[in-house]
Length: 171
Image 1: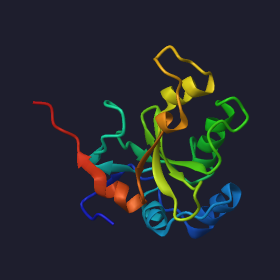
Image 2: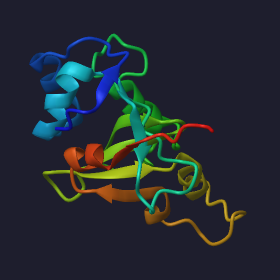
Image 3: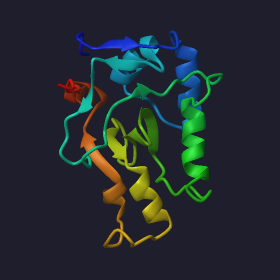
Image 4: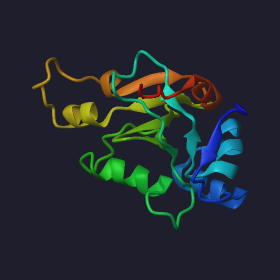
């Protein structure tokens, strides 16, 4: 785990019981590197590193803003976020099964992709393109495919943290 990232605005520690409860509800097992991080940094912002260097993510998107809190009492917690993504996607689980959001990126999300089992890959959920897919909107060009809105980023949470770079300073 990167030692040069400082996590700001953390919502407190997350105990093993809360983590296990979320895993049970979602029918998944989080990877250990994520558990190690979320225990101490739930809801936290990585500082000063918050830009994910990945050419697959559309320009102007992809900033890693904060880990989604696992505490069920917190507004916007991981279960609420997961539920809202699916309900607002038409109510019939338009976000594919096995896609679990764990970090905010403005109007988008970083997610674990459990569709091929464990350990999960990390993907970027581009919500604008997702809505185009859900509503079959072709106004932006060709038909949107799943890989257009659900972008593979890397193979692990640690690898994602290793991709974080400092946001350039305005000059």
